[in-house]
Image 1: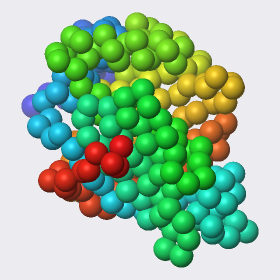
Image 2: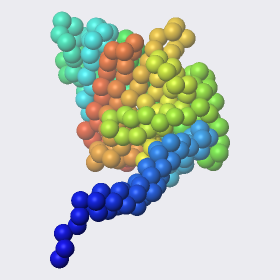
Image 3: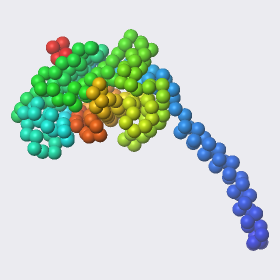
Image 4: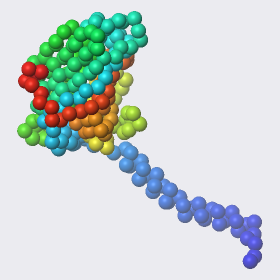
Length: 266
């Protein structure tokens, strides 16, 4: 077989590259188009509410552990009757949900006190000395995970109204990454801006950033909706941050959807 001449080889390489360029360009454009498309805020909220409506549970009791960090050690230690001269505290934690709108979050020290924050509709109460991170957690968990209206449309409208009450603009959307997963971001882009994040693959709540009436910056993070303990009903892990500092981390170790939750709990 004759050996290609020196002048033929460059021509063949050039021709091969020319043939590959349209394919490469098409692939690049397809990838960019897929990555750039972001659902409208109304669609994201509707799908999130719809995903919750598809779950058949009416109540759940989740037992686990709750850790307190940073300034949360002093606040929780004083309330639970535990020493505060350590970097973190651990207590037993139990989260109760009964739809619609009834939630209770307890922290119990093995050798100390029990504190509970309760959200029931528009009524809020605390049993024991309040732990701010516990109160913030139950408030947002109840609003995002225990809300249920007569229809998906009504639920979407209620969610949008709630987010706007937190100064989140739910019609402004973008993409981000959270815990290695892609999320939709509802709200104005920028560090410290009020935002609500939703996992792109399953439309579960991922993160909520907002400021309260006193201007305190809160950041709630929800992770792992696929654990054997709670399934899709609750995230396995819930974290509460304040002003860039982690205060609380709850990890669900067991979940019971058949537990009879007495009215007195709420």
